[in-house]
Length: 229
Image (spheres, rainbow, N blue to C red):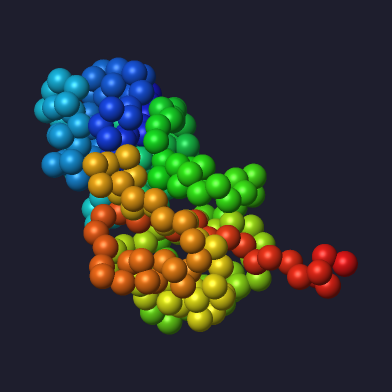
């Protein structure tokens, strides 16, 4: 049997990669990449030549799992990488990892940067307890989810697209109130931006539009004195 490595890669700054990750990417027989173009940028930065790179993304992942399992059963080693950060977390790969366990194929993890953990750490909100909801749905489904989370006391973390950021903030304001929010944009990149303030202030701050990858850290519901009793 071969082995599947889940390899964390930089979320922006290409220097944020571990020595072990570089070693594994050099040594594996094949590489599963969410976006080959982005992966080649990283590989070229560290002089890693990989001829056997397989496209493995949300659209084709399930179709390619049998082929990947076949390679692993033949004794090949493979590495799974996403566009940025830790694979499987809001990215393709969960079904593949599950299939490996069921087939008795060894799975290993090479930890690396995570937008989720980085944003929680930089927010200054309580990091001891939080929940992660991945990418928020659109429109009515987003508002429905926010109503479900309205009474959540733990810190909440979401991923969001630039095009939907303002609509999401306005929905949070309408449904959950004017809470404290931390918004991390383009983390570790040249134009990194951290914003911390109220939701209302965030709406004004980002009114003119925004670009880049976004992580939202939202404070939980604050207990009233009556609730504490």
